[in-house]
Length: 353
Image 1 (cartoon, one colour):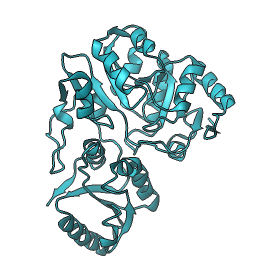
Image 2 (image 1 turned 90 degrees about the vertical axis):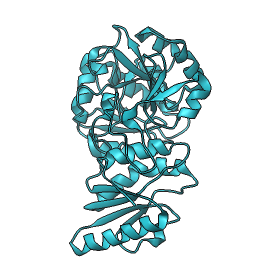
Image 3 (image 1 turned 30 degrees about the vertical axis):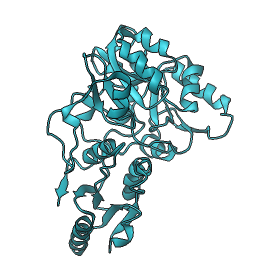
Image 4 (image 1 turned 90 degrees about the horizontal axis):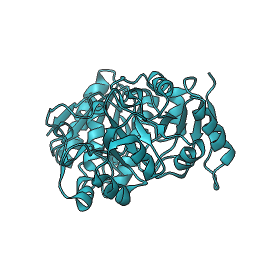
């Protein structure tokens, strides 16, 4: 299979490319497309075979549900068996945007799309290319991140091509994405809204809309850079994700101690013939004395850290490092989401100083 790459970065969007990609979806094929979070690998959410193709292309565990992307709230109503009032409140507040709602499904969406669950995860992306594709195709689009399962999520079309070229029909190249971290996932099937995956929409923002909000204990991040050890409720959060090829360790503590420890470990590793990468901020990069140092962003601009995280991990793959050390990023708004991704990329491997 030859994977066609179509440039949709211009304004207005190249409608001919959108139409071609839409026809691929209608015919049961797969198209990668940009959203405001990461690139998604899309297929018709109501087509069992298309969903099977998505799992196969990604090498994704079959119990890991696919998120259904829509462009109208009525589409959520059409695929849900029991839609709570909180869904409309959250949609009015955050859609289109980086919020995924888990609701009880009806027969419209097959079990092949939901990983065998009686619930379906749904969101409305805030990206003109994604919305144009949904509208033009007439399909609700099932779309996990457009990468090989376990690899860092794609924030550029080149990342998608690196992982999936020859496995999917087409890629809509919309340039670099905005946020760079996957959507917040909330479970609406219980009495209290529960966060299953942290993201840009944080707990405080949700509470302003619906009142009480819980968080799945399996994804809780604390100041020491560790989680509670509980099993995550969302199947997709049970697997090691976002992982670079190098062995990643997160080092947390006071800045001076973190820098000193990373410098010491880097020196030892390099003496042993290892190639070392370091994830630093703009403020700390010059304090590291050896290794391949990449700047992820500024601590006072947490969006820059989120935006650059996956690209940094993929850059280290290109450099070919054996070991990666990263500072911890407990930023106020989306720090939990950033650390959730880093911890999973590191397989929970942390050093607490």
